[in-house]
Length: 96
Length: 80
Image (cartoon, rainbow over all chains, first blue to last red; front, top):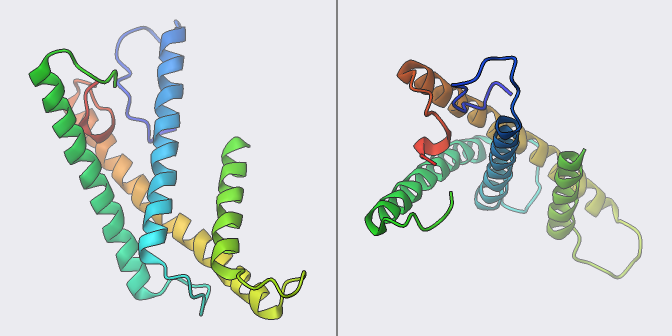
């Protein structure tokens, strides 16, 4: 679970509080979900459904790497835009 | 386990849709079997590659969060 950079600040290690556990679980779900979505989108975009070979060829590999970066970038951009919208309207809008 | 079933069904779904289009027989043809085999191999490799990029990305985010030390961290630089 080293890939979960949640803010582990606060309480001592002894008090495993229920809220933290729920937060980690939620984050884990979100990360897994994102991973599956990227796999799905980039497969659709990069792997043509003609299976001449079982290997990823050079073009496909490069496509996957770029697709991944762009997916993250889009996620970040949209996140920022939503955050900005939320701040402007003040009400926060989505409970993210 | 739930993750595995999700993975398994998405793989079956994908390869079935990409490889099986002919219903003039009720068993798989050799061609279809080859296609399924390659589709499976390819998807596993694809999954692995995205996994690598994902791990790299998360390491980067974790390192950033650590150096910022504020611990706000989180995903996609997003607040909550």
